[in-house]
Image (cartoon, rainbow, N blue to C red; front, top):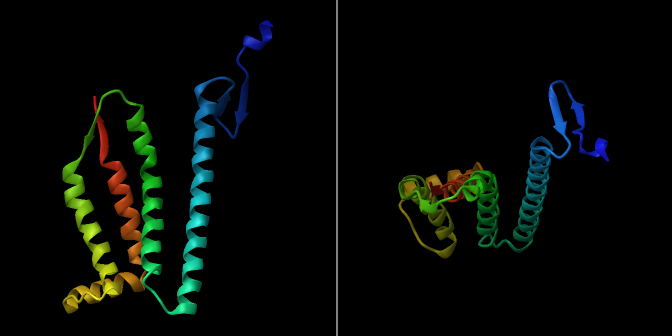
Length: 161
């Protein structure tokens, strides 16, 4: 079949072309897959947070709500940084951990999450730290801190070529 070997072109919205058997179609499928996983993860994370909120409203026990929010947001941040990690994984070379990035960005974010969680364990802190933790909880900033920590952790792994 001589016609089968011929490349087929499909015009999609303006100048964007999909090649049958080419790399362009594969990239589109990867991005659509990434978008679908992103939406599923977003819905699952939101559903889990809603469930934990309902549970804490009925039991008045907030000790489990914050760690679940942190873990789900951390996983979300890891997912956001996974594109960088996948690109690094495809490279040839040895793995390298960017220790400076983890020390300067990751450690303060991790300490912030630990301090916010430690209030539920009965650990007392100075008033300034308590006020900052309360502010993070009120404005849902703890989710953003956890997302950023997840992104920093996963994007700190690179390959030395």
